[in-house]
Length: 504
Image (cartoon, rainbow, N blue to C red; front, side, top):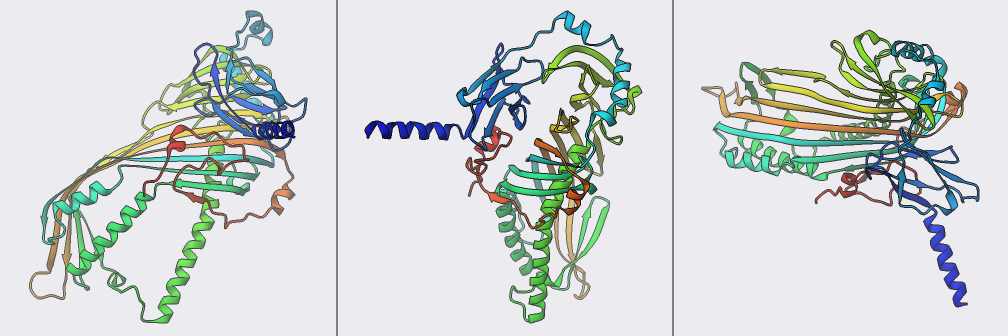
């Protein structure tokens, strides 16, 4: 009986350990992490390693004797394991050497112009533009950093609005906030065409810092109390900043108590709140579907994409840098840089057999948007990303993985005066005045990642008949929960997400 229990325990542990595969992929020579490696079971469904080489894969069924695990990555020798005996937590990939005879027999000696011309000619044939059903995982990581927040009070007639109070407001605001949204879903329709797409959200989470909301809510109440005590009901505000000015009437509801005297006003208020809540629920699915569609559309496969090196090759310099292997395909490695006013440089990986572009790495070479007027500045200084394509069940290339990171800064440095005026009082209309100099600089960074695990063809009828569920909303989390995605294959979160915790 004792041995029976031991066998039972060990077999249970073995069963649990086989529910998921967790490992990190490293270069065997440098021991550096290998990002964007493809990990697949029986060369079918799979996942992509994250930017630190980590991946996690859940098994949806019992593994069989012949099931295999395959790891592939650009420029490395593929590795194959028998799934049932796989135990490694670290996987080392060897760089793949290329023999001269492999280059000579791969194809004729095309010029870079001929290679790109053939890539463009074969777009319609190589890539899948038909109706498909794709299972995907999407993650958006948004970070805000307040680099400068300074308000200097020059004059105030409201005692409570002094420098000490303003400084306390500024010091209470969190200088750094993070926001993460994750979605597991099925996408029906044509890739990159929002009007021909429907989203079926299986599960979603929203990891965000509640301090931001609480700080604004608390100080909004405090400021409202001061204003209600100090200003008149029938006043209006004159807001001036330098040579610019505007007039703002005071909404009467600002002075109303929370209890409404008329029942019909209460009902109207409740109905309005219900409508806003419904719109919020609907907009989550619509917004995320639009975001995913834009990620797909920001590709060289679409004519109006910013990555227009195929449509307008005369605007770039191209150079064949090397030859390599990507998922056992022999590829040209071609760099591109802008000649004139184009925004991006990068590297293309083009299959030597069918001239399909199967990977693009790109980044901006200059500010994408920039202005500075009347002390208000904006600078979109960063956009870089990766596109990876792989063949699907229709033997066509479809997007397997994409990520894009964008960064911008917003600043304001100018005088600001808020003057309360009232035309119903005797004498001077000016009642109160707050005069200040303000200086704010805010930096925002957003990274979006999309991985498509499965991709299968569907008919237009299947697409038309599928009905979206617009009321789906994400589960709000105040800290990272490793069990939330248990049983699901996703992009392994980075350390910043794992460490995230909203302070109470």
